[in-house]
Amino acid sequence: MAKECLACKHLENPRFEILRTTNWNVVLDTNQAYFGRAYVTLLTHKARLSDLTDEEWQEYAEIVRRLERAYKDLYGADPLNWGCYMNNAFREMPFNPHVSWHVYPRYEKAPEMDGIIFDDPLFGEFYDEHAKRVVSDSTVGHIAAQLIDYLSIH
Ligand SMILES: [Zn+2]
Image (cartoon, rainbow, N blue to C red):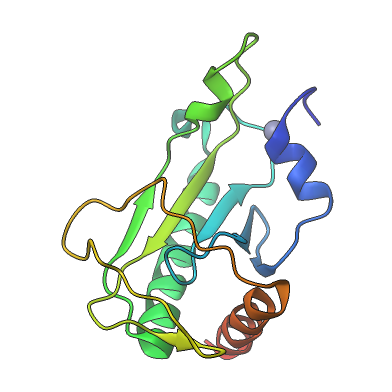
């Protein structure tokens, strides 16, 4: 583990994990401003996308296929917005980025879970990175359980 890497620390004890492959981990965020908001984190500490092996890219492609299908089938999400930024690793020296992807599912029709309507008022536009909707651990757990179920057979 690289020193002072929040991603490596996160990987030691990930909460709300919905998928783990040979090279990647996928978890839900507790901020569910975008229903199903997730992170896809490389299990190995690597600083940039150009460091990925072909195997890591192939597995990432498979995760994209599986998550896009799961979110669309279960909740009608389309598209998923994918981004690899790592900007928070560049706020303080020494810079120590770790490859991870942000997943923002987008919804024309708001999904509902535990009586909460997860609307997406900026649908068709760039997502609002500052939007907050912190729901209970129990609700995040319900979303995770459905995705885990789906992904276990798809
Ligand atoms: Zn790391």
